[in-house]
Image 1 (spheres, rainbow, N blue to C red):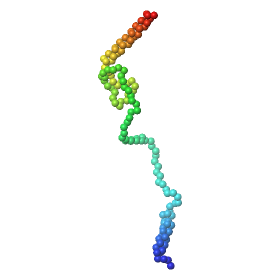
Image 2 (cartoon, rainbow, N blue to C red):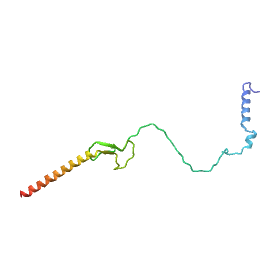
Image 3 (tube, rainbow, N blue to C red):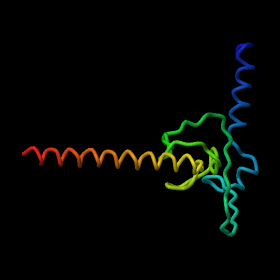
Image 4 (cartoon, one colour):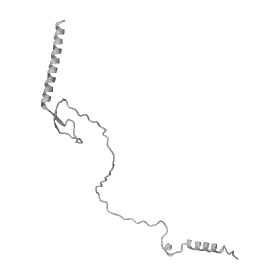
Amino acid sequence: MVRPGLLPVLWAALALAVSACGGDAESAKRPAGPRAVLITATTVEPRTLEIYEQVVGSLENVMDPKISAEVAGRVTRVLGFTGKKVKRGELLAEIDAQDFEIQSSSSRSRRSARSWASASRRTRSTSTR
């Protein structure tokens, strides 16, 4: 005879073996192999794709442009501003014309004085020989 504690273990083993056989009706209908995957198709149409990204940060300028005037003077009109795109030689500010005339005449008088001094040195050096 079978021991009394062994009988429930045998019944559990038998129930497990019967359930693992997979003899249900659904498994018999399914074909063997990998499961089917649903696939859909659509017509391809070109379109513009816009991507936006918001970030927090700071910008550092890699170029350090130098802006200078050829003559000193009082600025009468400013045409440029921060962030404006400009090209080389484009007018950014105007200087008072009177200041420019004063500096131009001063430069001309200095040049003429230098040329007079060099001419006088040349005449002295040729006359002493």
